[in-house]
Length: 293
Image (cartoon, rainbow, N blue to C red; front, side, top):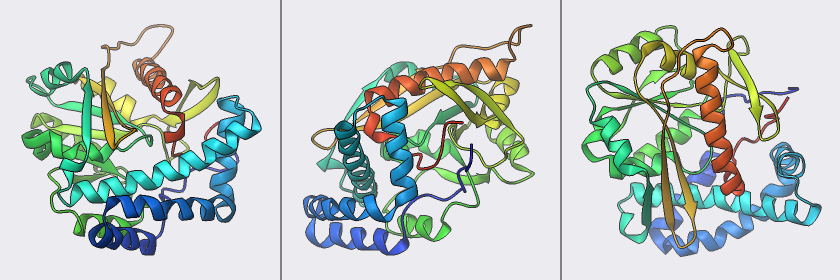
């Protein structure tokens, strides 16, 4: 891999504030309309992101040139829609959206168990969009994050959201994060990771994903296999007509064998699930760096 993720998400503070005010003053539909112009800007003026998405379309999805161009447009547009939706729902406009759930009862059964739970998502779809539906469960959610994420953008989004039940006390780049995660699980709370990006090149796992070897962070899978708590893979994917579909996959219990370590077995469950989601929603892959080695 010639370049890794730097711990920062695309976008600037001006763009976030612009769409926040547009949603408030002109509404969601107007924000979607203006988004089409932003998409045309990003294709030539974000060359690294465009190049990596093009490579994803051509080499991983095996699309032809015209279909790859279409994917580029859809990908940037969908990313913008998701940002708009996040702000709108955070400001109490939940009633303007529709929500569907897959395997929801099994997910609730896990949350209602007598243990903590580890949830692993990815930079696909819109993970945070589910916060309004966790209700009391949301108060027990701890999200593991990186210091290098754009702090100012986070502050803007949090300031302009009417509610946010979940907690963000854990920093994945901290030496004490393991103890804080363990404490949260001991309190029968839920710890959430994104399993598809890493900063520490020394702690990686490798497996086949989308037809080629790729590297993933060891931490979430090692902790989950060591701490012996239930694991859920969770994705919230955008569909037509302002609809979000929540996918919950309950991971099978893993054990170490002579052939495979437990964390590797858990990673393979995760990547198989993630690949199923990515192939179903190819335009919602938001890793804008050289993901595959």
